Image (cartoon, rainbow, N blue to C red):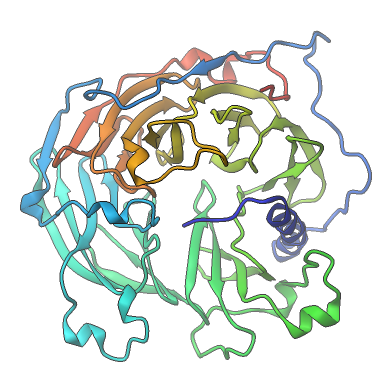
Length: 469
């Protein structure tokens, strides 16, 4: 799902998340502490010496000719009913497949089934053009035998499935979220007053962040998630005065909920989809300074905030919690190169990896424990910029690279085919020890090598909190 990343949008997100922090804090029963003026920067190393940043590790460019390791299992997908999508889908950012480990020995593979929908599926559905059938199969490893299977009907083309670390998953369709299990049994979990357009979870999966489209005039129905006044926020957007906001209320509603109970801890109206990277302690935001500089600020739900460091990026950096205590920053360089930076919540830069400018539209998949990351990118025939845009003919294919979450070390690379511009064709097992890739007509499963444990944050490596491009 695309989200705009311009400066104005970033300012809106900053204001929204600032309101989120206070309300979330109140909902958790803590006393908010409003911090004004300067915040305390990260402490220098005990030695008083400014330590060197971890070196920038260049990642390979291009598409690997073959997987770096031989697969331990290869499951043909044609017998499952999968057919590659046509080239016209590339660039439309549609979610067409999902691939996830249910556990270390089972895969959940879902994909769009081409063809007409049954007439019963079309009844009383206003957006029939976007409806599609999704086939879901649970496969036993290494044999690839089908353990269970079903067909779902979904009503848009955005991401529809989020895997949970306990073998369950969330299935989003329209205004509903259901929870499924390894037997593909579904039970209702949440119902919203309008279509849900995005979901995300904290690393511990205690909290669920939802973005839903709810016109002000739309009335909530019995059973809909609540919008309690005690958890509501009035967010000032782009200097619009209060009277103007009342006349044109934003339609996007952001909520933070407890996943297990559905209790709404925060509800706020914003003008665009809001990515809110949270852990159990707070949220992190990127605040623009001067030029291409951004300050990373960690805001605690228990009150107060702390600057983690600086990052130079020509695009708004993407921030995500890799684990409860480590943040992954995706930044853009001056020449189109892209940098992955792992930063601890203590403000330490743990590692930095850099991809060439021909690697575009990155998607990062993490193992449930955060120990491994799989980055997949489309590979273009040239560096992409405002002066050299990309079209379908420039896409050469898709590459997958597995990175050790503690050290940034490259562990594995493989091609992926066909290419999917929003991902969904790569999975890491809960332990991070196995990789699955849809490639060359099969689901290929690999055993991954051990990483370099000596490079983890716990090793006592001295690093400081400024990211230099």
